[in-house]
Length: 93
Image 1 (cartoon, rainbow, N blue to C red):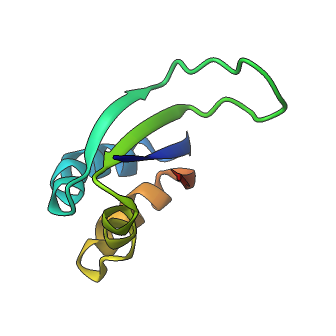
Image 2 (cartoon, helix red, strand yellow):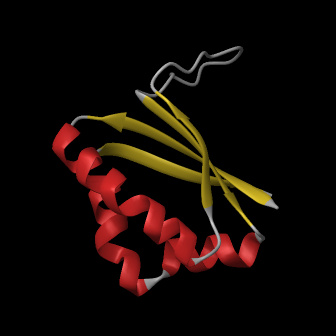
């Protein structure tokens, strides 16, 4: 199991709403799943600003996570997330 952290600052609520409708199917295509998502993250230490949405995703392995983010059939889904505001996705492992 491997995890990915998405740090999203939402400036376009309509785009994130559209993303939420498609994200589950996009994740499951590559064995991924939503672990948790919250608009109430707390910075315990360091200068990193708390995002308006913090998300933790799980994947069976690194290859599955890379397949999810690089899948050309999912490009429009990822574009919805990117269009929602500033977005970073970090693979933890």
